[in-house]
Image (cartoon, rainbow over all chains, first blue to last red; front, side):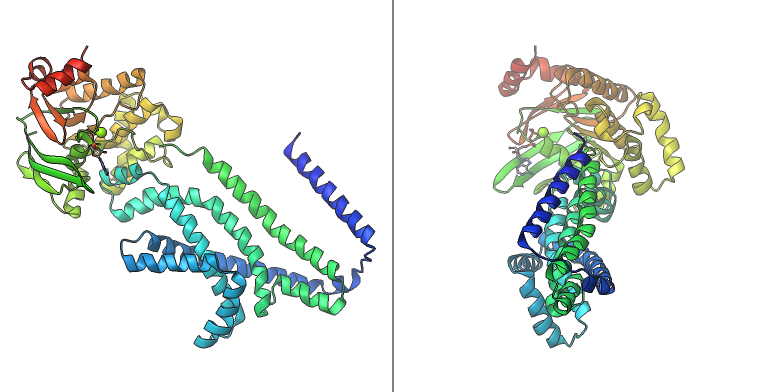
Amino acid sequence: MPRALAHTIVVAVLIGLLLLAFRSSGYEFRWEGVWESREMFLRGWLVTIGMSLAALVLSALVGLLAAMGLASRYRLVEALARVYVELVRGTPLLVQLLVGFYVVANAVGLENRYVVGVLVLALFSGAYMAEIFRAGLASIPAGQRDAARAIGLTPWQALRLVILPQAVRLVLPPVAGQLVSLVKDSSLLSVIAVSEFTLAAQQVNSLTYSTLECYLPLAAGYLLLTLPLSALARHLERRFAWEAGS
Amino acid sequence: MNLVVEGLVQRFGDATVLDGLDLRTGDIRALVLVGPSGGGKTTLLRILAGLDLPVAGSVAFDGVALPREETGLRAYRRRVGTVFQSWNLFPHLSALENLLLPLVHVHGLSRAAALARVRGPLERFRLAAEAGKRPAQLSGGQKQRIAILRALVVDPQRLFLDEPTSALDPEMTAEVLEMIGELSREGTRFVLVTHEMAFARRVADEVAFVAEGKVLAHGPATTMFDACPVPRVRDFFSRILP
Ligand SMILES: Nc1ncnc2c1ncn2[C@@H]1O[C@H](COP(=O)(O)OP(=O)(O)O)[C@@H](O)[C@H]1O
Ligand SMILES: [Mg+2]
């Protein structure tokens, strides 16, 4: 059976079951109120995309720095990177957002909640990126560094011409996966009142009292972003798989 | 080339791998290092090739001591070539780009000049048809021959080869040895670690037997293989020579 057909069958069955469940719950759909607020949804959706992308770029930088810190010869630098990674990965994003916004941002006088949101998201995601990059760099065989040194490359040339081009191929698939998580995690920005996609749905819900009519499109809106990203991650993984072997 | 090694010591953690190794060759073209596995051949060759710094001791080729700091060593590595047991080609680049990289980025040739430089050698060693392929698409023998070319196209003073055929099956071993033999006949100077004793006998001007971090015996190939006065070495050869 072709893969596309298999996917279609599974999705159709799921939707069928979902419809049956709605029917037996006796829930009456009223889409008018939600349809009238479609612009709010769209604006929230775009904010989610924008903030996720901004956070991704920033978190790639943070992650690269932290990965280099984790591999550093200097104990203090290594310790700083390690503490950052473990602290962020060991606590909920919700707590980081609340502390980041109400405590840290407040203390330094940062008021723009969009900026704070992107910064906290980037620091959160950067800790995961750091591990992705660290693993990517560590999986380049020692023989590659040897060969780079043997032909007389400088350390910087070795990094640029030999190590990074190989590491990038290794880390691209997990980075695409990280973007999927980032898009979903950004829904928590609603707790610091950033009008992203999830907050838009909550607000429309409180106006129209039509819960499912708000949250079903919300789920669909996230899937619209995450499904292509997941597909991209899988595609990258297949594409780079054959290139292994020196 | 004339090689003088004095009191070479190398340690990894608590393990002393080279234990005051001495070696003094005549003015020769090819030096072959043999000996039991774990005896320190790779460790010695890496120091000779300027890849590692020893804990103590000195190395001099033709009366010139090897630099003792990284910048000087890098300049030294640019003047010699190194070939590894597992070739270590760059997997993200085609065979051709593997050859061009040192020429363009280390030796400052233009791309056109670098291309002109590698064309002849590629054809000569029947590798022109593989030039566009990635390492993963090449046979082991082809990979190792490309690796030898990568070391050779920069016109090095000498080559260092560490068991270049140990990871290959007999047929590919033959094709790689043939290439090294040809280079040897043309006067390429090299230090070779190998277990191919028949080949060693053919190309070596001198053979050094490395074990337990020392050179236990060294001399002309015929003396070493047929009439070595050191029992430990005679014992080794009697077990592996037909
Ligand atoms: N980087 C290293 N770290 C720790 N031990 C090493 C390292 N390189 C080599 N050794 C040890 O040094 C000894 C000699 O190794 P090597 O020079 O590779 O021997 P050979 O090439 O003659 O087989 C071995 O016992 C090996 O385990
Ligand atoms: Mg070895």
